[in-house]
Image (tube, rainbow, N blue to C red):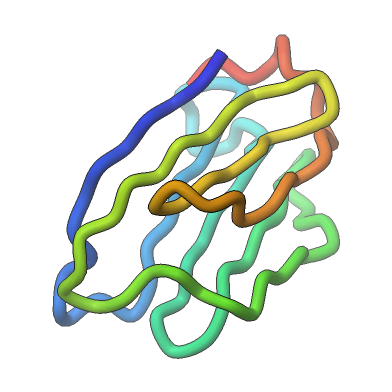
Length: 103
């Protein structure tokens, strides 16, 4: 299973996020939270039963304000393997079983 995204980071963006959730409710768990922060890093985490896990950081942020990007996320048995602009960025290990992620 994989997700492909193309986009442009708005020039006024400080950050954006992509969440892989277990349901549609705002109270549902977030299996994979992907959060590029334009001034510094890419942060990744999960939210389980209302509690954030340990944040995992990539300090080399490939996302730039006003620039186009392509992101490809492959859901593998070991985790979410993220590629940005054709280069592997990070593999975030599953904290919630993949089969529970529905949205």
